[in-house]
Every structure is written in C-alpha cells, then in structure tokens.
Length: 280
Length: 120
Image (cartoon, rainbow over all chains, first blue to last red; front, top):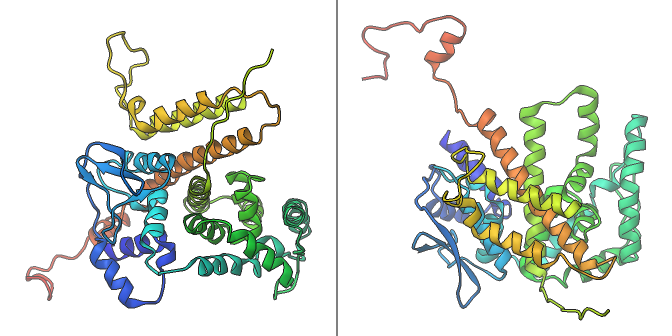
C-alpha cells in the first residue's frame, strides 16, 4: 500500500522526475517521505521576501523538497499556492496540490533541464500530436475529429503562419522544419518558469496544438481537455461511462491542465493598470 | 452576466474548500465572519473582480484575458474537488484483509490452534 502511494506521489506529483536515474530517485526518497503526512499547521499566510513571495505555515516558511526557500515571483500565484495548503484537511494530499508541485519543479529543477531542453521536450509532442492523428473508421469518429480538430489546427496555422496538416498513417504528420522553427522561436520568448508549465500542459494534453490554443486563450480548459480525450469521449457515449475510471481521469486531467495553464499565465504576466480619464 | 456567475462560482468553491461550516443559513449581526471570507484568496479574488469591472472598451483584450484566467482558476478548484471526492470514494480504502474477503463470500478462515507457520 505504501509502495503504491509512494509510486503515485512520484509519478503524479513530479512528472518531470520520472527519469531512470536511480541516484536521483534515492535522493527523493530520503527527502520526500512516503508515509502520509499529517497537517502540522493551522494558519497559512504569504509574505514578501527579497526573492519574491513566500508561504508561511504557522511560523515556518515553506521549503521545496530540496530544502530551498519557496519563493514565487507573482503574488497571485503565492495566494493560489497558499489556498492549496490551506484547504488540506487532516492529512496532506500532495497529489491534489498541482501548483505547489509545479513551483517546486521550477525552483529545484531536479533533472537540471535548460530552457532549450524544455522547449525541445514540449515540441517533441508535435510529431505525434493528438489532433493530427486521424482514424479512417468508424465514420462517426472520423466526422467528429474533422469537425472538432480541424478548427483548432486552422487557428494555430493562421496565428503562427505555419503548416501542420493531418495524417491517417501510423507515422504521423510530416511537420515541415520551418514550422518547428517558428514554434521554437515563439517558445523561447517565455521565461523558464512559464516553460515548465507549458511543457507540463503539453505533456498532459499530449498535443502541442491544443496546449498552444489553450495558452493563447482560444480554448478554455474544459474544451481543451474534451478535445484531447475526443476518441475516449466518443467511446464513452457508445459503450457507457465508468465513473471510477473515466470521470476520475477526466477530473485529474482537468485539474493538472488548469494548474499548468494558470502557472504559465501567472509566471509570464506583468499587470499594469492604466487609468483612463472619463471624458464626457 | 457571465463574469458575475464566474465570481460566484469561484467564491462557492472557496467556501466548499474550507469545509462544512456551522450550517446556519442566517447569521445574526454579532456572528463571527466565516474563516474562508478572511482568507487571502477570497480577498484577492473579490478585489480583482471589483478593480477590473469598469472598462470603456467594448472588445477589451485584457478583460478577455482576465476572464480566461478566472475561469481557469475556477476549473482548477472545481476539478480538484471532484477528483478528490472520487478518489476518496473509490481509491482510498485500501485492501481488505483476508478475513474480510472470506466473509464476503460467506466463508470463514480456518482456525489453526498452533498458529500458522510464520506467526509467533
């Protein structure tokens, strides 16, 4: 039971950590206890330090799993993380604290990935992008894929002036090199924190097209997740829904995608207030 | 208005997160403010919605961005709550002991007076 819980904590809370490097895994095991942790604090608050905003659990400052001080650049992100910690009941359910996980990954960078590595990891999904893989039968699903997925591909192609295309064979779509370069250039305009979030969203949705649609605010989270699970949805409507599997996966995917999207937006925005004079 | 509905949705999620309260539908004038209303998240969200309410532009891009962000946050709160509820209902009970499993089909485990080999 503890072994399962432990595997789940590693696999679900730290997606970037499932590397075959055993040494790193052992290090994690020492720092991240597998047993259930009780809630050891009453009040959660945020405060501003030199590096950014910090989270206070009672009198103690929150630290990352590697022991660094937990600081985030954005106040809204700090409040959201504090809310995650505040809403824990008697035991800490780390697998529900997606924003905390993302911040920890960005702060610790346990697999030591550079910006280029993150961009390459995210764009790797383009060759096997979900929305570019089309089936040839049953006709209902073919039509559904055409009507739901074609518009999002068109939107990306128009916005970034690229060619993507679709494919029905097993090798997938043939993405021209120029398109990949355009995406590489676009992604390098994000800072490394936002890239952590972006790669996470792409990994969850298994599609670069959908994640860019979501980040660029053409889709909302529910719609993006629906499009990512289009075939599954189709089969559910045909064969029936199994709550403890389908709904469970759906809500988990939604929460991870929403957390990733929010993370990207909060790490890359700078809000300015422009007061306009009322003219009458 | 869609924004008002979104605000109400987010605040309801925050209220649900803080757990079941005293349960009184009407509070007297001297009643203490519930904890969730004093939380940083509640204050921040209400302040943000109030601040960005007024804009003279019809197709305000920033307003659309904020709306998207707010609806993303509401989706996050909602889906985490639903995921946790399903987890606790289906996946958190652990395994039954062999004694209980036997009882499920109406059998009893055999008694061994000397104990099993590996038991003390």
